[in-house]
Every structure is written in C-alpha cells, then in structure tokens.
Image (cartoon, rainbow, N blue to C red; front, side):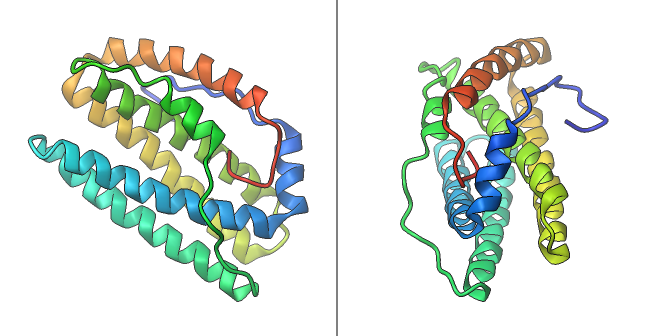
Length: 196
C-alpha cells in the first residue's frame, strides 16, 4: 500500500478488465461511487452508535462519517455537472461477501468489523489510485488522487483503532487471512463499472 505499512496489508492487484469496465461506463461508476461513499458514512455512524463506551473509536467514527458524507457530496456534484444524477442504492456483492467474514461473538465481532473495513478501504485506495493514473481529465485525476489518499488513511485508521483494543500480532495474522479471502472474492466477481 504505502511506504509505511506496519500492518502488512498486501492486496492482490485488480485485474485490468476492471479498469476497462469503469472507463467504458464512467457515469455508472460515478453513481456506484456515490452510493459507496454514502454507505461508508452510514457504516461509520453504525459503529459509533454501537460503541459509545469507546471514546477513541467514537470520535474516529464520527469524523469518518462526516468525511465520507463530504465525499458523497463531491461525487454527486460531479454527476450533476455531467448531466447525470445518483441512482438507487443496490446491494454490493463484494461488501456483502466481505461482511460475511465477520465472526460473531463479543470477543471477535469488533475485531473483525474493524479489520474487514480496513481491507475494504485498502481496496478502494488501490482502485482509486489506478483510476487516477488512467483518466484523461486532469480535474478528475486530481479528484481521484485525493480520494485514493483518503482511502489510504482510512484503512490505516481502522488498523490503528483495532490496535487500541487487540494485540498487534493478532491483527497482522487476521489481516493476512482476510486478504487471502478478499483475493478470492475479487477474483470471483465479474468486472463492472463499479468500485467493487
């Protein structure tokens, strides 16, 4: 991911077919991106509401919810400027499969929830960076470079939050497991004009 990666999160690279699908139908991709940002804001608020007894987690999730909602606003503005509009939210097969990896039980649920979120954000970082390299419009390139940098901070944030409550060696070990599962999930999904 970045030069400083203490959590050793190494994703399998996205297939070139994903980028081809996005470039072939960019407005559809933008609608999905808007939906992802809105859902990410809701996810952060959901975590905040479930853990009011963890002030560090609560503060981080409130800030993240606001940031993700700000990204939603920016993507919707892009859509409107292009004469398009956001669409109805649909089920994200990738996120659904990733959330299926979260184990139930008081000892592991928060642990897995934070680390699954980290992997999802890391995938966003990777894909937005790829997109920023390929777009012809310079303003869109700048926008997606900035969004990619945000996703980079977000996956690291989720790992750092996990480290407040769980041993680092367990985090590294579980991340490795989740990354292996994530590679299979990504490989099994058909490329489409969507973030995942």
